Amino acid sequence: MSEHKKILEYDVLVVGGGIAGGECALNLANLGFRVLLVEKDLTIGGKMIMLSKVFPTLDCSACITTPKVSEIARHPNITIFTGSEAKKVTKLAEHNFEAVVVKQPRYVNVEDCTGCQLCEEACPVSVTDQYQYGLVGRKAAYIPFSIASPRAAAIDIENCTLCGACERVCPTNCIDFTQTEEEYLVKVRSVVVATGFNLFDPLKIPRYGYGKFKNVITSMQMERQLAPTRPFNTILRPGDGKMPDNIAYVLCTGSRDKSVGNPICSQVCCMYSIKQAQLLMGALPMADVTIYYLHIRAFGKGFNEFYAQAQGMGVEFVKGKIGKITEKDNGNLILRYEDIEEGKVKEAEHDMVVLSVGLLANPEISSSFTNQKLELDPFNFVQQTDMLANPAKTSIDGVFVAGTASAPMDIPDSILSGGAASAQTISYLKQAMEK
Ligand SMILES: Cc1cc2nc3c(=O)[nH]c(=O)nc-3n(C[C@H](O)[C@H](O)[C@H](O)COP(=O)(O)OP(=O)(O)OC[C@H]3O[C@@H](n4cnc5c(N)ncnc54)[C@H](O)[C@@H]3O)c2cc1C
Ligand code: SF4
Ligand code: SF4
Image (cartoon, rainbow, N blue to C red; front, side, top):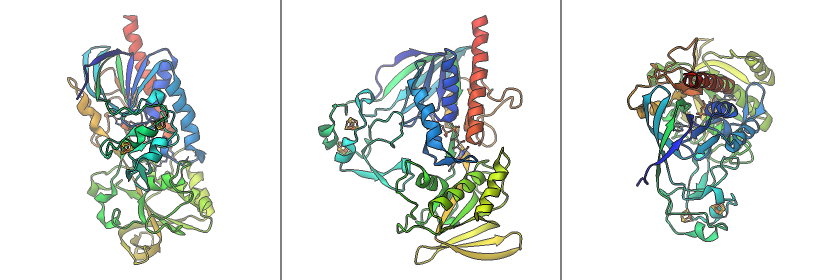
């Protein structure tokens, strides 16, 4: 049940605390604007904080994200609400918006939590860890991952048995089962939508065997295995814990495919797969990596050279369309594919398959706008109504879009887009000040 609504006032409401929303909030805050950053998840940093390294430089993703995330978290002009959503956004007049923000109970007082993890150790309940994309388990009392921001515990109340073991060991008594949902009425002068993307669900392509064959995983699961906050100390295939030595990538899983309702290119899958292939060659020097592709889209600065580097390292590229994946008794996988260059149907055996899943729109936020419509494009991304001249502009004056909420894009473009959204927001706010 919601508590009585508390009223808060800021200059800008930024919805979504990924790299695009974070960059936008930071720019606004550095120029003196007061920002409320509302993030649905328990941590800010979005997908970027979960990645291994980034293409084409192979810089550590966490090492780039964490200083930025801590700058955002410590900025005096930024207030962060995690575990929260903007439920209703109403434009009352130009430069005058009202939003209802709902904060879910975390059952832990974040300010007092030291992150000691004693509650995790004591909790008897194990469930699937969503931050490791199902590769391992976590407890019902848990810290999302070691570099989460805030690095504080939360109680997964749906799975909690209320046994009280965590409460008994907590040295600061910060676990509080009496917390309830809180509702805030937030008055702002402008809104930025930076709600990011959803990953394509490979269960929608049953012939690839995801969910049925344990050694068919997604690229995000491989990303977690390669990341510094990884679940295991090496790369393991989930079926039997064996280190794989012949890994296949299936590009365009859920992208450029009308049959699954997503005809557009996801922009990053070719490059992140090439990146992972190079990282795998470092992690498993004896392993073979084959990338099955339709076209390689290496269009950005340094991308084609990065592709050539992978070829030079021995990554095999096969222009081939995968028809079906089947499993052998030993857990190995048979890929039946059309070799496009030779015009022949062939079969190949691999001991692990990575599906390079696409980036889909996350259109949910559009339904939060009450009296004016936040228009979406034909693919359900937020419509950029003046894409060339004002890329952050949306169908509602005073509401701007940043990052992959508007289209699939990589990290540098998401940061640029966050920067553009902050500049356009400031220009909109200045109009009001000059009146
Ligand atoms: C497997 C994989 C590997 C990748 N590797 C690379 C790489 O090496 N290099 C590179 O440049 N790019 C890479 N990318 C792309 C990169 O992840 C994106 O460019 C980047 O994460 C986009 O940032 P964003 O802030 O737009 O979105 P997101 O990271 O999706 O962040 C959006 C945030 O908004 C929050 N949110 C969503 N809805 C709501 C709501 N209603 N209310 C409040 N908050 C909400 C989400 O919880 C999330 O924290 C990779 C992508 C994948 C899938
Ligand atoms: S009360 Fe809930 S979260 Fe705490 S230890 Fe028991 S099951 Fe785990
Ligand atoms: S909730 Fe208590 S026991 Fe758990 S990490 Fe925080 S301080 Fe430690």
